[in-house]
Amino acid sequence: MKTNILRRLALLCAVLACSALLALPAAAAQVDAPYAESGDMDYIRSYIVTVDPREDGSADITYDIDWQVIDGDKTDYLSWVKIGLANASVDELTPLTDTIADLQYSNEGGSYAKVVFAQRYYSPEVAAENGGESSVHFAFSVHQSHLFTKNDDGTANFAFMPGWFDDLSIENMQVRWRGYDGFVADNTGTDGDYLTWDFGAMKHGQQAIVHVTVPVTNAAAFAPDAAMTTDDYDSGMTTDEIIGVLATVIIILLAVAIIIIAVAAQSPDWGGGFGSDIDPDDWFWYTNGVHTIRRARTAPPPAGYHRTDPPANFRAGGGKTRGGGTGRNHSNHSGCASSCACACASSCACACACAGGGRAGCSVKDFYTVKLPKKEELP
Image (cartoon, rainbow, N blue to C red; front, side, top):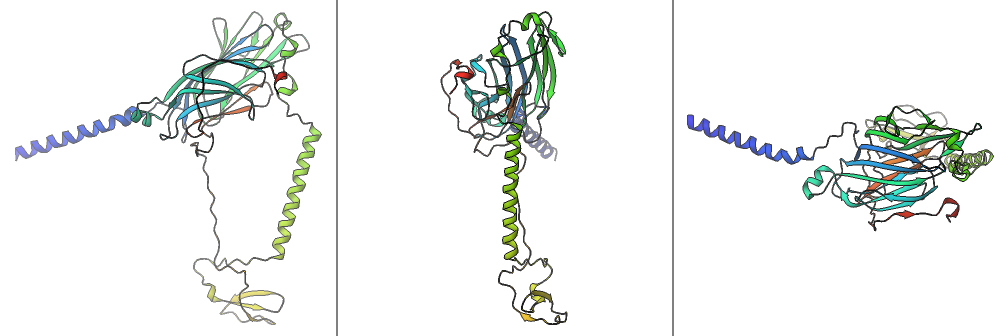
């Protein structure tokens, strides 16, 4: 008896030990992403934007990001990101980490820095299986102009909104701006020569904006062609043109609605609508030569009406339609839908960006620094 008990205890210990060993890969695959929301595929641990102004009023802006993949199968790997830039006035992009295989400017639908990684990154669970990695640190810099506006008193204002992400969360965000004597800003702290803004955790769609005013002594050296223009944030249409377009769209929609109503009125469509507990055979159809109606079999025939067959386009029973789609951020492999970022300078139009990989089928190119023609030279 005692021997049987010891054997059972030994078997129980073995089962518990095996369970613990089997649980190790799952535990190793877990990622600490305290601010991630349900359905998120990615998570940013650290997002640091550093602005180094030049004497002409342009600036070298560095984006330093720790990106974590937290979900997705082996086909949902991350291999590139597109980060929205303030505007199209960019003439140099420089990769600063060897995790970047290619860095290019893209103007498809906005102004972007497209970062292609040197390798693929998977969810922790997939990475544990294939020996890959699930997090990437990357940094790049851009030379950006058209960021400031001049005031009547000779000072200059900067209002810069770094990229925000509509589909993922940020654990910690900081903006750093090299300051000089006389600079006035709404910063929360300093770090050596830099004014700092510590925004901490950022939720989906949450935005950060910094304001800096440069004194006359510095602003006097700013190049006039480096200032922000209406082209940097204007749609190119006047108010009257926008109103005209909207009026045209409304007229077209009204015309379509009138046509649909007219067609429906000429072609009546009989719906059963009986419900699941009423048999269509419980009804009789009647007509007076002009109108066709139905009444229950137990009801007396209406005066002036006689029995007839159901209308040819009558459908017995009710109908039911079902629509699809949820707000989950997983990609459907037809485009980039994992995460988006937008960036603004002052009131300029924002450029949204995406992250993707296997879901978008991007190729990796050579590592190099891109030098672009200035905006007026672009085709």
